[in-house]
Image (cartoon, rainbow, N blue to C red; front, top):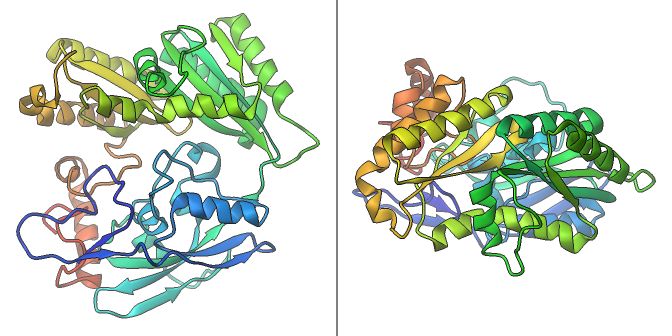
Amino acid sequence: MVPQGGNTGLVAGAVPIAGPEQLILCLNRMNRVREIDPVANTIVAEAGLTLVELQNAAAGAGRFFPVSLGAEGSARIGGLISTNAGGMQVLSYGSMRAQVLGLEVVLADGRIWDGLTALPKDNTGYDLKQFFIGAEGTLGIITAACLKLYPAIAARASALAGVPTPEAALRLFQAARAAAGSGLTLCEYMEADALALGAAHVPGGALPFASPGYLLLELSTPDSAHTPDSTLEAVLASALEQGIATDAVIAQSERERLHFIAWREAISEGERAEGGAVKHDISVPLGRIPEMVAAVHRLVAQKYPDCRPNIFGHVGDGNLHINIRPPKGQSMAALAPRKAAITEGVEALAVSLGGSFSAEHGIGQFRLTGMAAHKSPVALELMRAIKHALDPANRLNPGKTIPHA
């Protein structure tokens, strides 16, 4: 049985495997908001509700739900929890795991576990919901969730800054975080080619200035009496003076702010439109981001000199999307014989720097080789033991997440 929602994942986690007969279980009609509690700042939503519908429901109650990503119009709550989705505001609010207070789950034997508690504190043994978050439907089928809400955002300040190097991008991030603390709610790094690719696929997308790299910064606050504009202006002025930033534009309207975000979100769409890419979703400790970027460029220059790296990601949490595009004018067919070797090389670099080969996209089918190569035997053994305990007949989403489960 393969649970499926918006089917927006990038690792084939909701796609049946070849071989055994499987039933696709679509949860999209389970799409109600069951309850919103503005006192406790919680919402109980069914698995088939889309992320944008959840955001709108929160806004209608004067609250804010922070998980945001490019596929939010079609990605569904059950899948987002099952993959522990991230997005652009993880550095301040955390991933989906951090938003979940309770779950309702159908188990492999048909029983329903009602864990829809809204309690921030419940220290009564194992935290059972954690087994199902990020498990990609292999341990149980999430049907509803109790999620945290936050005070509505009253004011934002956003800017696009040019940075000469990844080291400079990291220094600018550190300066913004030191000045704004948790008020720094978005910090995205994009190499020049990556942002140009996104801007080319957004109407009126001419970039305001050229730079080797860009940092998209956003500060936000629920306090309407204290806007973050002056803080952002001071951070950028200091960065320009020190040479950490080479240029910067502060959004003068909500429309301009959304335009900056649209450029960033359109990078993947631009990749698809212009030939595709071998995609990687890695994370490394923050201080090693520049080292990882340099190592990828060396790898490509030495072994795949006709290919084009496309690097962008969430610098605030160490998550980079390292995508390798085919030679100019060619399709992904040109990379087919080299795809496995490219992925092995990029994943090995991330792990060698103390990082992960999958930061937010999950494992599904496409990252099973990485799991077998980089996850410790003890970790895999524990995962298999949990899988066998909860789904001994391997009925739920077979062939995903755990190699040779």
